[in-house]
Amino acid sequence: MPRLPFARLASSLKTALAPTYYIHGAEGVLKDEALTLILDRALDPATRDFNLDLVSAQQLDPSALAAACATLPMMADHRVVVLRDVEAWKRKSKAKLPAVSYLDKPMPDTVLIIVQGDDGDPDDDLASRCTTIECVAPVGDQLDAWLDAQLAKHGVPLTPDAREHLIRATGGDLGLLGAETQKLSGLDTTSALDAKTVGDMVGVRFGETVDDWRDAVLRDDTSRALTLLPRLLETTGVSGVRLVNVLGSSLLVMRWARATAERNKSRGAALARTVKFDLLFKVRPSVGSYDAFTAVVGDVVGRWSLARISAAIAATLQADISLKDTTISDEGGIVTDLVLALATSRVKKAA
Image 1 (cartoon, rainbow, N blue to C red):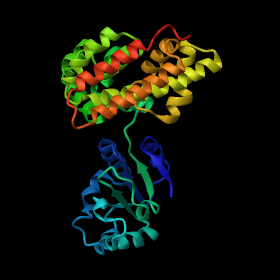
Image 2 (image 1 turned 45 degrees about the vertical axis):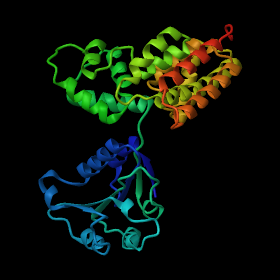
Image 3 (image 1 turned 180 degrees about the horizontal axis):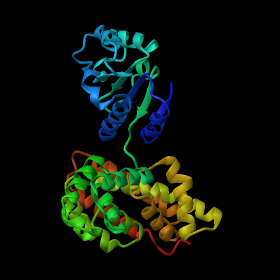
Image 4 (image 1 turned 90 degrees about the vertical axis):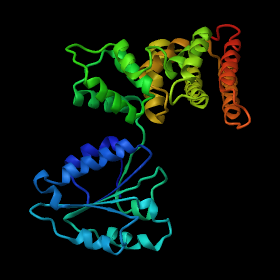
């Protein structure tokens, strides 16, 4: 059966409506949006209440699912049954066997939507018989597109710097982005909101985000990185582990970029484009805004030899291990030592 990333669901629904869907993944906001898209496509608002059944696998008698799906639609082309919490059915549980039997021969005028509530792997017995929709946290251009849709929906105009700061300040978390966008929509303005206004509303000052700290480390702006560190560690949702994870992911991209720069003899904007399209769009790492990050990579790659990057990755991994050691509580000291170690590793310009 077809497997769709969330980004392709809307276009797929314009072509055809599948008889069964299985929604899964770690991003709950996208799961809700995927469900809404299918319901809006399948049901007429005028008869929606008559043709929609919401059931839970935790409470449903398994044998009752087929009966719910066999009910004919009322004054409509389709009927929809939403089955939630299927993770309650263990992988080898007999409770799901009636659902498996139904999926082998679904009713033509009923759309069954199965929603897995947790972020575990999909149930193969169920998912293999459905059109599956994977909902993972969007990054890069996909995150940009999601945010732009939210800003347009709520009528919130932002300057480019303000938009970038909003992404950085929330760490790209869809729940936070949605909540902050709604807050910004309450401002009475006729012009685009600037970065300071957004920073005041979000509670994170412009230039003082996790990504800004990462950029300072990569630029060898040690003073800036050390100044930001205690402020970030006092911010809700920011920990030493998160900081080193972001830095570690970024250093892995840097290693690929450095090898590419040496092979192609490229730097600056040309290298930034290569990193963006040949690596980031394919691997989809969580490194913040792709345009902003690749611009930094293009600027600083000459300072980072492959040997220096490899040593930095090893040091970052060791810091991550130390931070996760329950006997060590000084996360600020561990990350500070890491920043200083990476700074002193730059003996001379690598390129």
